Length: 199
Image 1 (spheres, rainbow, N blue to C red):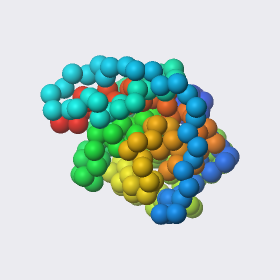
Image 2 (cartoon, one colour):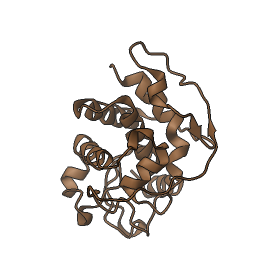
Image 3 (spheres, rainbow, N blue to C red):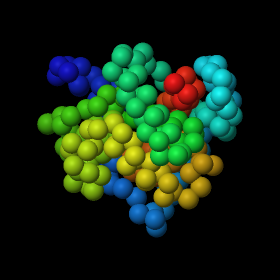
Image 4 (cartoon, rainbow, N blue to C red):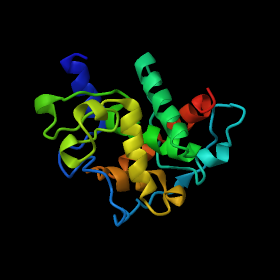
């Protein structure tokens, strides 16, 4: 990836360079982050795939304005990898929606390596997880299945994550300086999960 594109990805993704982005795996006693007070907007999942319960993907409607990006083959492959890892972990479609939306915010579904001076932490991979915070080695964190499984382990430790707004669940795991930013990707994440959950 060239330097200009990396800067563009970072600028669009709203990656946090301070405040503990993907600070580290949660512990069972972690407190919930306060979800933003944003009015839910009821929307229909656009993908029509048999065998996917659309009500489980976005059970309370999306929050706020939604963003969407066109995905290249690598980004689609990374979304599929996140969805497959979620299924392999025995977690439901909603967990896949939260995971894909989190990766859309953190990296635009790009498996980012170390970004040098454009990143003042050691955040890597699809979820911008940090080796120094206990997420795993650089090699592990840049493996889509491993990084997704690590994210899901954190999500499982959030009491009531299934009933939380997406941004609250993602923020509790990631501890981002931009806690409300995850919400904007819920619709695109749900569409991707609906499309690829059974593929």
